[in-house]
Length: 226
Image (tube, rainbow, N blue to C red; front, side, top):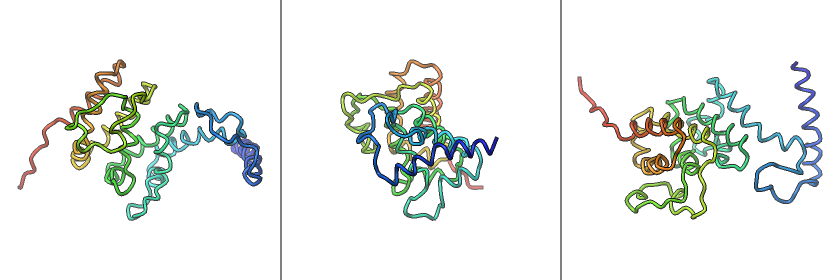
């Protein structure tokens, strides 16, 4: 089976390497639906790479690799190359990317890296697909990431209820530390999910939102000195 898999990869990638070397044969623009029609087969299969990353990040070594070295000040972690696709037109790519991010979010010790505004700054990439065209009050917008303020009137939410649920579940995971909860409150995640809850029709997504709201609005236990 492994030999067959290698053969299949060679069949798909060898023509791609030749095309890249020649620099010709590709359409000038990506189709708006993200289908990559007209591209070589190897390029079209790139949408499935994120699903491979999702499988790899079920293991600790995969999560460590994608989130990089905590001492890296230049934010070169591989996951930063994936998270920009959370609103990609292709459903397969979005699904793989969000599943990868969710797996990485289980690493509580690295939440500060994911949320660092001078580093990975992943929060806007999670909130933007959950936002519609609704307007927020000035009070609600005070502290929101710039990317989700004053969105255009034709802004659409993530169309897949399954992926909306994953997005909310990632936010729930990021409330796993007090630092994470306080940061999400500071960045006004609650108004975003409150508006989402009013719009949402899927019961499973609604339940995930309610869990997130409990984490955001609940009282923090006072630190005690023994």
